[in-house]
Structures are given as C-alpha cells and as structure tokens.
Length: 505
Image (spheres, rainbow, N blue to C red):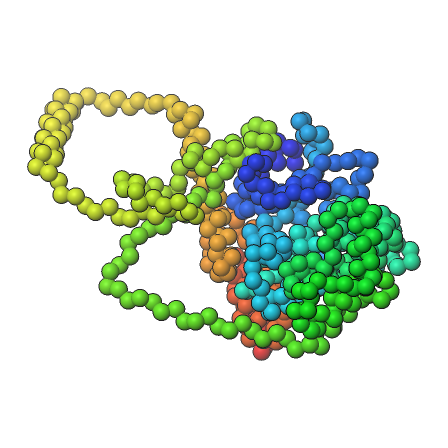
C-alpha cells in the first residue's frame, strides 16, 4: 500500500481526532472507508539510529504474541516517507470507545467486583505475555494509559497495549533487555528501571502493584514529580520502607498484601510470576455481585410519543481524501447531507447535544386566499396539458440528453459511500449491544461487511472459549455467537463443533 492509498482508505482530522499522545507518537480516531468501521491509527516518526524503539519494531515484537482476550494487538503497520515530515510508521488497531484505564479510574466509582475484574484481567494478560515462546515478553512500560478498556457482557475487560519498550528475555541472569530505562513513566517504573539495573519479568509486577494500588485508592503509592537526583533518592527511601499513602489503609485483603509483595524493592523478594498473584487472589472469597438495579416503573399514557430523534452523522469530521496529511477529515459535518432528510420549519425545536430532536409540526388550515391560488394553479395546468396534446400529438418526441455535471456525479458517489458507512455504523451498534444474530443478518447486505463480521464473530467465539461452558450463562452466550456465525457461513466447522459441545450439557 502506498501513502496515497493509505490516505484514501483511512480518514481522520489530525486536529480534532487525536485520542492520545506519548513519547513515541500520536493516536487518532479514524474511519476505515473500506469497511466503514472506526479504527485507531498510531503514528510515530522513525529514528533510524534507534530502530528498536520504532513502531514497526513494536508491531513485529507483538506479532509473535498469540491473540488473547486481555491483549490489544495491531492489525497492520505501514512505513511511509511523508514529504513534509520524513519517515513515519502508521499502525492500525481496533478502536475502543471507552478509552484507557486511567480515564476509568478518574471518572468512574468502581465497585469491588469491577476492581477485581480489572486486576485479574491485567494479570491474565501479563501471564500470557510472560509465557510467550521460550523467552517471554516483558512489557517494561505498564501503566493505566497503556491498558485499554472494553465493556463486554456488562464487565470491564482490560486489554494491555503499547509495547514500544517491550523486549524478549531469555532468563533472569542473561537478560537481553537494555540496561537503561528510557521513555517509561517514573510513577510506574520499578526501582531497577529507575537505577538502570538489570530487568526481569517481575519488573512488570512492580508496575502492576502500582496500578492495583491506584485502582483500589485512586492514587499512585509513590508520586515522582521530576527525575532529579534528590527527588529519586527521597522516593527510593520511601520505597525501601514501604511508606504508603494513608489511603492504603482502606485497601481490603488479599489486595493489600498483594500490593505490598509487588512493591518489594528487592526483585528476589517480589512475586516472581503473574500466576503466583492469581493464585493468591483465588484463595480469597470472590467479591459479592452488585445488587440488582431497582425495577423501572413505566408511566402509562394514552398519548403516543411522536418525537423522532436523529443522531449526528458518524461521518462528522470526514473530509476529502485528497490533499496532505493535515487535510484528513478537514471538512465539517455540515458539508455532508444526511441519508434521510425530513423538512421541519420549527427551528426552535432543535436542541444541542449528541443528537437533535424534531417534533411533528401541527397541520395548519389553509386560508381562503390559499384555496383560490390552488384552484387557479390547477386550471392553468389543465389548459397547458390540453394544448400540448392538441398541438404536439403528431410530432415525434424530442429527447434531450444533458451531460451530467461532474459535481452531481461526485455527489452520487458520496451518497453510495455514506450508505455503506452508515450500514457499517448500524452493524457496529448491534455488535456492541450485543445482538450478534441481528448483526450477522445486517452484515449480509454488503460483501466487505460480511467478511469483516465473520472475522469479528470468530474472534469473539475464541475469546468466549476462555470462559468454558460450565455455566449456563456462558453456554447461552457461546450459542448466540455461534448461531450468528452460521448465519454468515452455515458450514463454519468451529461454530458447528461448539454447538455440538453445548448440546451435550
């Protein structure tokens, strides 16, 4: 794929669609015009003198990691020479609307069950990374901003991402990891990283201990405002004494003991593996489920609500595919007409927000003058029609072919594109509900959307495999996914096999 083809396929506005920015690049929300789905694009400049920290190297590193429920992997990575900015890497991954864990911690009041699910999910992702291949992968930059969040079956599902500092490690004594710590966030860095000492697998477990403390209390145990020698010396003394904030007293067991053991300065006294922490969590009783929400009492009314709600177009911010990198999505949403237009003279009914509300206008009685005008118009039409029939009956019809204006052709093409994107947007909404079978039926209307839907459903079935079939809830969920797969591909062998297993319970 060339850079021009990349710009044609992925549309975004660098000014308005930025999702985050770090030491290694920027992340943007974009629209994949081929599938109509929303994706995330990570863009990073290439430093040829330090290729090991390039986005392409990150893609190649995590490419050796098998898919996992708690790992967010890139779909593709491209390297282009951008005329105005030099060599850049562009990586494409799934878009997670809920953002990262740091936003959840700041903006949500988490229940004990949600805290438990987040902790276990991150640990399972780390265990998978550390057990990859013969060497294992050490993340080295684990922090809430590098943990994406997905809402799945009513639960928060953490997904570890951003492997820019990740390395393979063959053993504790013969590590191939760089001996210096560069680019990571100091609040989550282990003492050995800060001091530039040898790094092991349980370096990530120190970072997990910091994250777990933040999940439980809302703050990090050791805040490092700057990297000056005096500041680091003071923080290091607190780490040695395990002087934790007052909020730590509110942390319940077994999490309090787990945090302390993760935050041991000496790596030999720290947890060695993520599995050890998972075992300690399993020994404790599971947190009680949250109470069910109160029943919703519907108000009875004999009046039918005729209010129609129209959401903003999902293509707001999409612009012309031509132009430079900065021009992606530069056109405003007002340049695009909605697929379904309905006139409404009552402009005062328009409200700002995620959508706008239009109420049915009340019919008005025509005045006497209006009636006379209508009758006069009808009479004129009758006279004109009679004249045409009388004077032009024996003449051959003159057919004039007008050249279609190029603007009109472009507009027609735009409508087709919008129809495809709107269909994908509607399908994604069904997928997120989730209503997988309706999602599958809708996806059959477009060949590209059909193939994309099959891939997503197969991945979802693979994720569900990790929960097993012991409980009826899990069997029902798996059955729903498999039946959706069979709507698209009635002979898909893995879906048929899973349904056979479910039938045996």
